[in-house]
Length: 222
Image 1 (tube, rainbow, N blue to C red):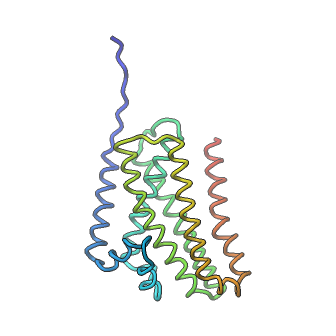
Image 2 (image 1 turned 180 degrees about the vertical axis):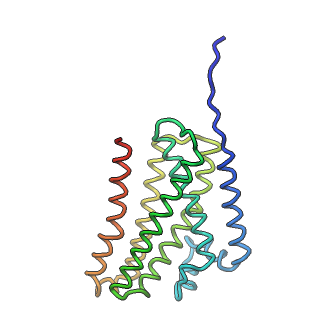
Image 3 (image 1 turned 120 degrees about the horizontal axis):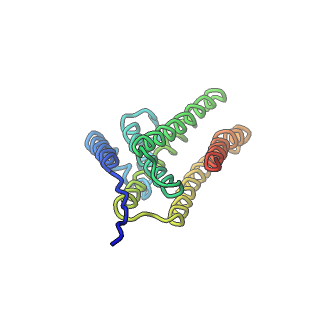
């Protein structure tokens, strides 16, 4: 009888990260009960945005907690993507995941900082704060939706490349719909400040993702 070698990859570090994520969600739910309840209905009603968007506090503890969940959830999905399209499992998967998570958080925070700087330069802080709050809220919510899907891929079923392509397409489509929704709701303001809008769109909505795409494809090519 021929012995077949089986490679067992420990998932303990992923389990620990998920325990941390669920702990953060429990804190967010019980420390900010009403806010969490409104947030959980974000795709069904605009009540959360209407109530909290009047005076958006981007650094509210609730937003920080959910952003931390966002970072772990997005990092986990990118890690699954890396495993599926890469060549085999990394020698130190936990370290690889931390690098992915750190790179994602750095990219998002750097982009956020540049947007705030641009808002200061053109004196549109109020409008930019609402815009960033709107984007942050929807992307945090999408990260929550993505989390159980990533858990399913890790513990139950290994996804194919086609499934990940479809899922990535859905995520990009949801982000596009979110941006279009913001632009439509603020079309009058955009029409009177169209030059700044085009500048922002090219420099901070299209440019960073294009640069990131080129870096990733170059890395894969090597």
